[in-house]
Image (tube, rainbow, N blue to C red; front, side, top):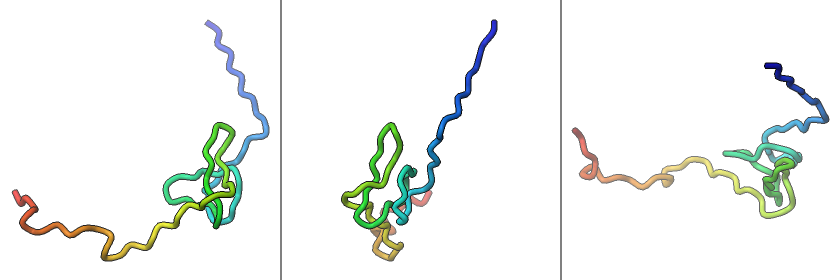
Length: 77
């Protein structure tokens, strides 16, 4: 059995993290951000930072991030 494999190299799009630098064709996931006034548009041709409501920045961790669990609710087995 003969299997031919063709690897075609075209102008590949280079993806980087979406940051506040507003670059296009980026990976907008997790904490990655588009710049002010931009949002990440996900599609088949590539992720882009486009005009729209921007991705909110994650607030710095603080004491009010979590609800306190009463000690009586913790099962200590």
